[in-house]
Length: 366
Ligand SMILES: *[C@@H]1O[C@H](CO)[C@@H](O)[C@H](O)[C@H]1NC(C)=O
Ligand SMILES: *[C@@H]1O[C@H](CO)[C@@H](O)[C@H](O)[C@H]1NC(C)=O
Ligand SMILES: *[C@@H]1O[C@H](CO)[C@@H](O)[C@H](O)[C@H]1NC(C)=O
Image (cartoon, rainbow, N blue to C red; front, side, top):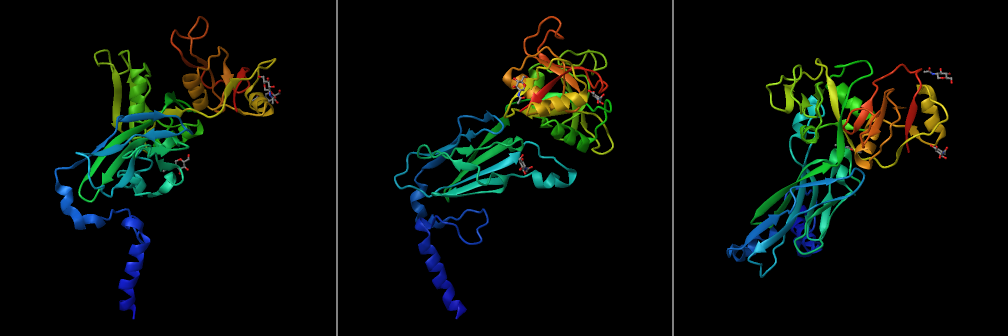
């Protein structure tokens, strides 16, 4: 009885799927090539081209981005082929814990589309779609961007005979900042460094992010963890004690360090924040406890270090008043350098971690 039913079921299924473009039960991200039957037509010297005008796209945290990808045939096809499009992703921060190294080292699926149907995966579910502004436009639109969406995206077009792909790098606009613990220099092992950045509304900076910051002039003579588990520091002006005067400017690397046993500072990456960082106008200076309460009674929260850095870098916050931040440090942001406001370059000035009873202003975040 059962054996007689099976072919019947298969026929019904086939009829349900217009043009054979639907999803089969138990479908597992592979592609089906149902049109192989009239394959001869395909071999008339026609070739598939998959292109992207941009190899790197930068976007804002919480915003949307379009990763461009188009395909066309040369010469143009007389009979359309059925194409499948698959977007996959290699995260920029592939190492989050030693045990998950292997799991993160390969591309994971973002979206698969066949005809008008599509399916999205994992944390991309409900946040991605294909733009389809013209025939062959398979650009991926990602909404509500997360800090951890950065990385290399692959757009792969498969038509049963050919399989072509192109990659697009996604970066988030943001700022790299060095960070050390209230407990002192070289305090963090790798996991501690990860947590420290998270506590400041940031992530561990990648090598590419630190390199870009170095190109823009970051010079810092204390070694810090990066997302790939290496320890490095950026030097624009070679000098003794920072790799020596004979070494060309660049990133000085200690290479991979022991994640549990070895301790350094950290380089964090803060992407743009939704909301507002501001210096709270107050009649008097405040100690740390009063500063926390003052932001709360102003309907906000005392700002985190990553929030101050992104407001400085991305929103041009400029204020020559030292203020408390949530971690107990005191800093102020300068975009237009001037006398009595620190060095001659723009930057976030730091007073380190003063005793909590000392009196300063406060930066709040809303
Ligand atoms: C990425 O971040 C989002 C929100 O911040 C979170 O929900 C998601 O689980 C994270 N994904 C990974 C792979 O860490
Ligand atoms: C917060 O403080 C600002 C001055 O810095 C003031 O103009 C505003 O009214 C205050 N808001 C609340 C809700 O207290
Ligand atoms: C800040 O001052 C208040 C009094 O206005 C006091 O109760 C509090 O203990 C002080 N906090 C610190 C950390 O010194």
